[in-house]
Structures are given as structure tokens and as C-alpha cells.
Image 1 (tube, protein in one colour):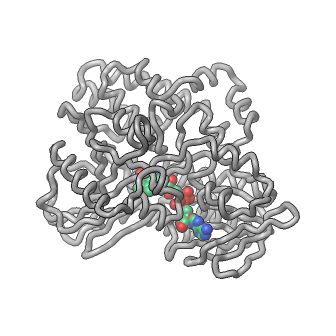
Image 2 (image 1 turned 90 degrees about the vertical axis):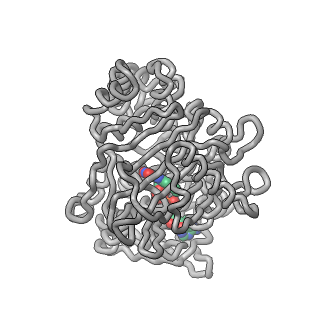
Image 3 (image 1 turned 45 degrees about the horizontal axis):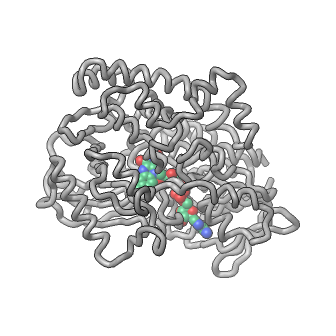
Length: 497
Ligand SMILES: Cc1cc2nc3c(=O)[nH]c(=O)nc-3n(C[C@H](O)[C@H](O)[C@H](O)COP(=O)(O)OP(=O)(O)OC[C@H]3O[C@@H](n4cnc5c(N)ncnc54)[C@H](O)[C@@H]3O)c2cc1C
């Protein structure tokens, strides 16, 4: 039995706490914010309610595993709802397609909406994606990162390595296998699921649309914030202690081992094991003593591009929108201009002039005051908050001006709600940074930009014995399923009491 301190109550920290408490460890979770959940936030006012972070659950089996391993199954605690259609897309030429929620229905829909042959091209790509998934799920996603050993595991079979196409980018793969520019755009969008640029992200991200279409797109009725609440309840039921309003200022290292933490108010909590759910950049940059033996991890972090952030509008709307899908994506004419702006190509990071707009509008009574109102979460990709070197999202007037611009963009693409706005809340990358302690408001830690990015991502075992990293900034990456998998990996590395 070890005394474990978990720093941060995001989904990764909570899932690790639940697993470790369930296997007999004495677990304390310390969260700096007044509530648990991290990026899985919730905003409520006048009967309107909004998830402020994730709006889409994929790979539900990972959550099912978590609940099954720690007590009653997910279906008894938090039944999920499968979305069909998964997303309604609108392209710049005015074409629309409602992507079915089941893989087998996709080809016919694409043929009907984008033209004959589109379905077959997409289906062929997903067949390739399925092979990639098989080659990478166990040796990469479900296994601790171990440098060359991880590559060797992946390469144990040269056919697997060829399938993953290590030298190719997601964009390159689309160019080669898809002829319709709209299909290519659809594929490119999956790079943004890890805050990356499809021109630099590896072809292996093809597993993202595979996972989404093969295993479905899901919603948590009542809002996704119920997910961290349920995992927190599970952790507590298994004996973990959760403390909010408890900011960790330092991870203590004694005799070369993690020895506990010191809180911002000076309180010291000794521990045998420290699991860090705070961003890896904070851990290596600020929380660990300068002399901690983590030089390689610090150097690796210098070599990767942080993931992009998001600019969010919460819209409390009068009236209902007939035929609106749960998720809608409005594409721009020039997708590359968006990635140039996000990652600072041709003149530094800047807000995207003509961004892709994502609208999540759950048809869920828990999110609206009455049947003639709606609550929309609107997200556009945004560069990180980097005063001095990039965009300063706190600059006077910027957030409101940009919010108006996003609403005008939506209107120009057929979704004009400006005269229905009861009120709006604007949330910039600076807000995300402040509320979730995520440096720059990066959504997914480091991006997948570059062929080696996945292998440079911080490993779950830090260089210091007794110290582990869990969550979106560590292996295997960001997004709810991967973060939950990272907790499974960390619990496996620590082992039962
Ligand atoms: C706008 C937005 C949309 C998204 N959409 C999706 C989506 O649709 N689907 C999806 O799968 N994913 C999505 N994501 C990503 C997803 O939210 C994250 O990958 C995931 O929630 C991250 O979980 P985590 O465990 O890494 O921790 P985080 O949620 O980052 O939580 C870390 C916690 O640690 C705490 N902390 C940090 N430092 C300290 C300290 N020193 N002391 C104490 N506590 C500390 C923070 O306050 C925070 O609560 C989205 C994210 C955002 C912001």
C-alpha cells in the first residue's frame, strides 16, 4: 500500500485516483480550482447550461473499462447516448452532408451528398485506418512510452510499420487516396482533434476518424461535466480523498525519489508516489526542483510544438433551430490559412480571419430553461495565449471584436443567430489558461506536429522514481479517451497495493 498524491482533478487525475484507490492505495487528490473536472467545465445561468470544454465522447469502451475495473459498470452510472448523425458538415461551396453515426451508413451518405465514388474512397481509407488501429492500439496507445522500445514494438512486424506510414503526413495521405477536396478537408479536420496541423501531423491520425466512425460519437445526457463528477464519486467511494482549492506549488524530491508535495499555503503532504495531472510543461518547468534529474524530459519538451487552443462562445438563444444536428461544422474556403494563423506560418500566430466554426447544440432539456430556447457552444481553433511573443487574448476589445467576427462568419455560412442572442459568454485561450492551469490555454498539451511528436510526448513515468504523469499533456495524448487510457497505464506502472 502506497500513499499516493494526485496533483489535479482533471479526468486523467480522477481516473488514476479511482483505479489506484480501488487497488488498495491511500489516495489524496489535490485540485487548485474550486471544482473537479479541469477542462470538462460547466457554465450555467438563467436556466441555460453549457459544457465549456469537451462536447464529444469517443471510444466509450475506454470509459467502460474504467468503471468496470473500479465498481459498477458505466451503463448503471452514466448511460451514454449515441449520436446519429454524428456531425452535419457544411462546405464553402454550400454542399452539406450529415455524417452518419454508424460506419456502415457512411459511404451511401457521401455518395448521395458529395457525388458517386466518394463513399468508396472514404471506405477504402477507413479500411486502411482499421489496419492502423490494429497495429497501434496495443503497442502504442495502451502501453507506456519507452523510446526506442516503443518503436521496436511497433515495428515488430514490418507490415504493421508500413501500414502506419511513419514518414507520411495526414495531408499527404488524403492527397493520395481522396480526390474530392471536400473529403480531404474532412480528413484534415481530424488533425485538430489533437490541436495539430494536418500538413505536419502523422498519417497515423487516420485512426481518429476510424475510432469515431467504428465505435461511434456519444453524448452524456445532462452534459459531459457529469463524467468527471461520476469518476470523482467513484474515486471517493473507493476511499480516495478529494480536496479542491488546493494548489500544489512544488513536487518534493528527496534522495532522488518523489517524496510528496508542498501546497501554495505551505502545507506539506508526504507521499510515496506522486501522480501529476497538471500539464507536463508546468511539472517540468515549475513544480519540480531545478536540480531534479529530468534533463532529457525537459529537453524533449523544448523540441515539440504546443497544441493550439480554442476560442469559445456560449450563446443563450431565444427560439429553436429546426433540423439542427447535435454537432455542426461550417468549413471555410481556405483551410490552410487557418493552420498558418494557428501555428504562426507567414507572420506569427494570429486569430484566424475566416475560421472553421464548430457548433454543439445538444437537444437536452438539462441545457435550456424552456422548450423555446437553445444553448449553443461555439468553438473555433485559436492560437495559444502568448503575450509578448504571440497573441495576447487579454488585449482590450480583442475578445469581443473576435466574437462578433465569429457570429458574422456563421451568418455568412447560413447560421445567423445574431437577433436571437439573449446573452453570450466569451471564453478565450487566456480564460482557459487561468481556469485550468493549462499553459497558454493549449487544449491537448503538445501537438502531433512532426513525425516524432508522439514519441517526444512526456512519458508516464518521469525520470524521478515515484513520480508519474497522467493526462492530456503526457503519453498517449489529449482528448477524453486517451487521457483515460493514460490513467490505466499509470495505474499499471504503479501496480496494486
Ligand atoms: C474547448 C475544449 C473542447 C474540447 N473538446 C473535446 C472533445 O469534444 N472531446 C474530447 O475527447 N476532448 C476534448 N477536449 C480535450 C479534453 O478536454 C482534455 O483532453 C481532457 O479533459 C484533459 O484532461 P486531463 O486529465 O489532462 O486534465 P485537465 O482537464 O487539463 O485537468 C488538469 C487539472 O489539474 C489542475 N491543476 C493544474 N495545476 C495544478 C496544481 N499546481 N495544483 C493543483 N491542481 C492543478 C487543473 O486545475 C485541472 O483541473 C476539449 C478541450 C477543450 C478545452
